Length: 262
View (cartoon, one colour):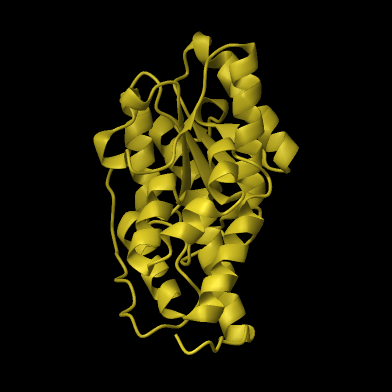
């Protein structure tokens, strides 16, 4: 390095903010360590006073520490941001794409025509709407309450699939809810088949998906690289879930966190 630094102009600033939002939405500890190795900044990542700790504990200041890291690396060499973007595109292709215009080919657009449910002619994504996909069994009542409390604390509105009845088939209601939602919370506890199906719909529609589970073993193999909020189904565990989920939602409270087709 020659000791010079890139100025944080409007374009670079916009790119950093967009990448920060994508990182906060899904990056795990392993992703950070991968980025450190590929960028040559393992020491910076591991020795940062708060970054990984805030990530592990779901602290409110995590987003700020992510931005701090990206500003420092972006000023040093924007190639570091290219590396980060490649990791995001590899592991989290469903997350909101960067608004920065790069030389990389644009993502392909997919046109589909499902026969199981109907796509409305006009789609409006409701900023602040959280769709909750979880087993409907009575033993999950307290878990649902914890999720609702988290949404309320973060200024979001939560709706669960079984709380609506607009069509003759529940899958149409669920699809419409996921389509309208800004964020989808899925509980993999118990390996519920309906939740797995609904998660696939959410990922296909490019939604931000926040997975939770009482056991890592219940998370589908193809999704184990995603950060999962683990919780214990007791009074303290559900309070901790509510706090961590609220922090995650607050970090995503931006109209930019909607699919690009919306």
